[in-house]
Image (cartoon, rainbow, N blue to C red; front, side, top):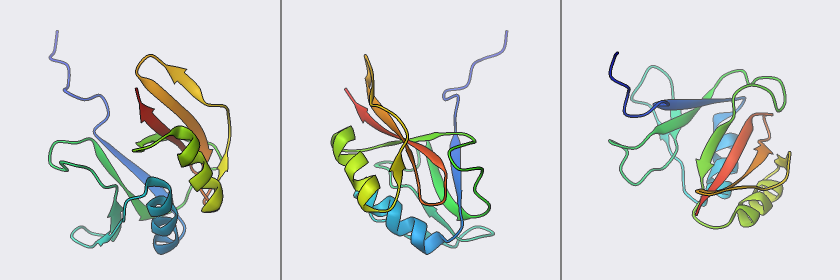
Length: 125
């Protein structure tokens, strides 16, 4: 039997049509400023994390989003309530695609960003 990895998911990428516009949306929803990083082959905007070196992270990049609401769903941590995060999604031009789901370790809601990407907003218990 082989050793299991520390984390099943190690990175997330969300394709967006316009990086600057997407950064405004995600900065508003997450209440964290995003900045363009040009250290790799293409400009990206990393999701903020307390300890980037050890966190499971991800970024936005200019690409082709999937079919509206289709494809993989990346769940993003929010610092306040799911309800407040969902309100910010609406204010920033996105939509919600379901009811709030409660689990023993937290709550989340599915949303759609302005490019049609499915995202989840997660509030830890």
